[in-house]
Length: 335
Image (cartoon, rainbow, N blue to C red; front, top):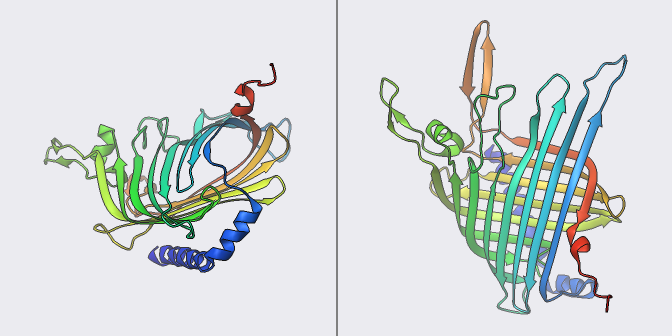
């Protein structure tokens, strides 16, 4: 896996160097296209994506199903001449029901991202930056069809990043490159059973020969390492916007060179004022997350823990999105 992670790291560095090689031309190009607004800007929206399939006397066969994802987004951005503060809050929760199965969870995300930047030289595109992020989930997660033993819960895991570094990009909301040589990564597993199992990289519990716990598993794991991120947002075609967030992290002490990857890319396609379609991809690789698989050889069944693997989640949906700012905006024309 190191080969692929170092390849991604090389692409990140090459892309950053190409952009940074022409700061003046990029600055004047951006200056002509758009003006940076000072002060506060906020945005809030909620959405619902639904997918339904039904079969009646269908000779090819099939399973009736319905699924939905509720989304919520909020952002607050503050800009002054030499510094900025951007904060984003995202929540998603999805369920799926098939006729012969119980309801299953398909998506579950709570995410908070906040970063502050200070520009020392107005002629430069570089900022001193501090960045914070926290993400976890709402409900229990299961390895279906087993519903007796949750494999994840609220803040089990939870991931928090806090670091100081440098950020490149005059229009930070649209495109930026961020590098932090000192980033603290904290993994929370605030559940006794999962912590005792050593889930998500925390130290597991220690047992005696009779199975009694001598020391409970640790619920917090902290790492200090290097964090590189690339954030990009652009309207590539009319009413089609792409957003991409790539995060690469490696720890100084534990397995330096094993790079954790988080890459989320979404295509938002606007049909009209309220109807939107989304196509999304989410890649993840974490060296601390071991994959548990079930093996059935002849009559013996066992759970085998294998090494870390590349995780991938893909989303395709059409739904309704409501901009809350337009709904609750006060009417200033009454007077």
